[in-house]
Amino acid sequence: MTETTRPRTRFAPSPTGYMHIGNLRTAIFEYLLAKSGGGDFILRIEDTDQARLVPGSVDVILKSLALAGVTYDEGPYYQSERRGIYAEYAKRLVETGGAYYCFCEPKERGGYEKYDGACSRVPRAEAESRLRAGEPWVIRQRIPPGRTSFADAVFGGITVDNAELDDQVLIKRDGMPTYNFANVVDDHLMGITHVVRGSEYLSSTPKYSLLYAALGWEPPVYVHLPLVLNADGEKLSKRRGDASFEDLVAMGYLPRAIVNFVALLGWSPGDDREFFTLSELAGAFSIKGLSKSPSVFDMNKLTWMNGEYFKRMDPEEFFGMALPSLKESVARPADLRKIAEMCRTRINFISDIPALVDFIDALPDYDASLYTHKKSKTDAAVSRSSLLAAREALAGAEPFDNDTVYRLLTELAAVMGRKNSQLLWPARTALSGKPTSPCGASELCELLGKDETLARIDIGISKLSE
Ligand code: GLU
Image 1 (cartoon, rainbow, N blue to C red):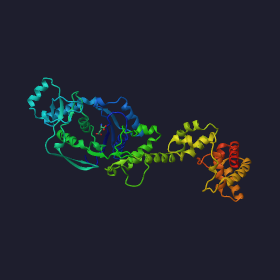
Image 2: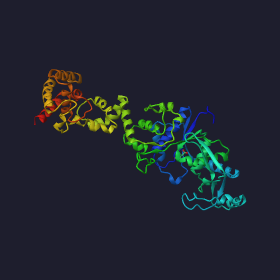
Image 3: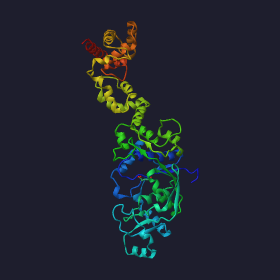
Image 4: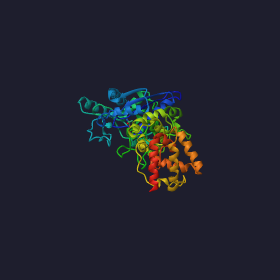
């Protein structure tokens, strides 16, 4: 591969269930590597291990990629539909000595593993007559003596003693290739320039290198990604309860926030930028930014990032997302667009909205101690006199909108020789009944209307008179 070759990468998931975060990250980096070099990204479904297939998982993969905005230029190709191709190359390897027929009975699933290579020593003529006699067989890779080296773009040069490599099965009894063989054949035939995958495949890579060499093919650039660990320092896994991409979306994380967050697991742009769209990522991506140290999937950081995405979101788009929740939470006639804007900068999830706006329909039963607030310099006595004065001023306020009310209340504070907060804090408390509210006193007045405002202030005054 020369520098000027357009990259071609592939996402090659096995359809065994769901899209875990590690898989999503692999897909994102493959996509970014291709796009950053003006190349193509290919989707290939590695479904030759029929025993592990989970129905519906291809749909999950397609849906997840679409949600993430990771679009493929070719595919999906299905390895199960290409089975004839692999057998042909395996036979070619048998011809050239890179593989051999093995007639041993597999002991159990995976029982090929500790194979001692006995059939590699069976003379060719004998092997051929056993084939003609219809004995069942598998084709195994013949590992030559010596050492094997390869270069990984992230982990550097790696050399292993071939004695550590097993004569892995290439073609199984059912005629299907193993993943280990099919991925080499397909990566070559599909012109893949960079193989990006998890570092758990590093240990198999010498065997792939030997296959490329035995077939006379040039290997791709290997780009192995560092591990992703959960908060407990364990490898992410569905079995341990770590969320999949779909789970995170269902929990209320925005796909764009997840993509942004996941792209920063093991990759850095080289500066301190943190917020990227997918196309900005493609502009910034380079293999050099990949790290070999494990990264930690920090849910708290993802949650923070999700909130930041709402803060940066176009108000109209946010309104569309928030509307169902607002309609359910607010029955009082009110400007839902305005309420949405109050919520937008104060939530991490759409599901945070109901608790934020619950006071609009019904004043919560709150405790008078809320009126004591050191920072605002208010206590029960100050609050009571402020509310009495505010009530009188507000009763005559016309129009009853944010600006008018704000002006009235601050003028009143000046007249009374008080700080604005000594008027505004008690009013806000009386109107919301909560220690925090998504907006200030004057906005609350406009939101609730004059009648409700005065009624709530009366409740406040009576609480403070008890
Ligand atoms: N089918 C493998 C997996 O799902 C792909 C590994 C690779 O990218 O080569 O993990």
